[in-house]
Structure formats: structure tokens, C-alpha cells
Image (cartoon, rainbow, N blue to C red; front, side):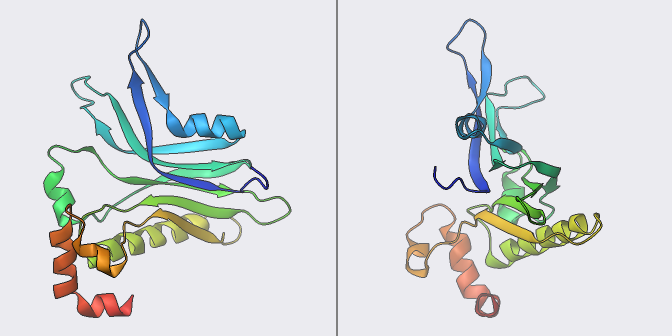
Length: 190
């Protein structure tokens, strides 16, 4: 890549169980990309395939931050606000959504706090706004821990669609329809 990007944010990054050899190993897609680009990588899982408590884990997916620069003050922000429909699905979705945060020290400049976000593809507009507002507060608190406030960048998959396509998506269409019907003021404000 020329020029090399300062930051790459991955969503739906995967760690998967590779059972082709004599003993199974877990492989990380984002780490393979980082290695190929000679970048550093931090990964945070969101949900697991299989259950951790009965040793049936086949992998997980989550979000990653890649950079050729040092990644400092790494943490994972737990998504404290989740759409009601996600809460209802938590019996068969093992894990909890987290967002990775790292400060990237850009050459000759102040570091920048970045977070890789993947919002659920279901839920109401106000629930997604609450998720981002909570994340922003978590980031602001984290950035104040240093000697001076760190500029912040949120990037990723917000799972928003152009208005005409909202009705064509079979999964979550009901939530989007309810958002349009019940949340017209919230949609106008944002």
C-alpha cells in the first residue's frame, strides 16, 4: 500500500478453529492482514461461535485496530447499552459486544484515540444513538487520563442503510420500520 494508512479499523474480524492439521489451532484473520502489512494489531471479541463453558468454542468474531505505529493505552469498552432485541437473543449468542480502543502515536504529532465500532444490524435508532453516546463518554473519560485530552476518532460499521434500502433488508426490517414510525423526531435531530 502506498501510502501506508496510519490506521485500519476492521469489523467482523474472525478468529476461527482450523482443524486441518493433527491438532486444531486457532487462526486470526486480522492478525494475518496486520502481519502481511507489517502492522501492529489489537483485537477484541464480541461473540463466540460455540460456548466457552463447555469447551465447544470454534472461534469468535469481533473488531480490530491495525496500525504501523505504536498502539498505546489499549483497552476494550464494554457496550453497556444494547438493543432490546439483542438482549432477547443473548441466550443463544455467547459473549458481549466490546469495542477496542487504542491511542495511535502519529509521527511528529499528538497521539489520536481510535475505536473500531460494529453496531448491531438490529435495533431502533434511539438504541444505536445511546450506544454511541455511551461509547463517546467512555472515550472522553479515557482520553482525560493522560496529561492532556487526546483527539478521538470513532470509525467502523454503523449498520445504517440509505433510506430506500431499509425496507429491503429482511433481518431487522421490523426494528427499522418501528424506528421510522415511532422515532421521527429522533431521526430528524440526528
